[in-house]
Length: 101
Image (tube, rainbow, N blue to C red):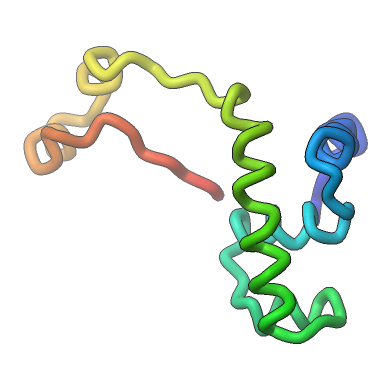
């Protein structure tokens, strides 16, 4: 999945604090990062599509609860000041853009 060895501790931390199997963690992170279908994930992990879906559903909330503190949000007024004028004009109510790539 392209995880640097310097950051593998995050996977270990998630495993410890969520009691999830490492396979569930990797599957969930791949779904979020790469937007693979559950059929593709099932093939990758040797499980049925429905099992991949259940693994994701079971894991995503637990992982989210643990990593939400890693996300730091810039105040809305600063975000709006930094937006390009054409974007600001067209999407004046947007204050957060999440890019998983």
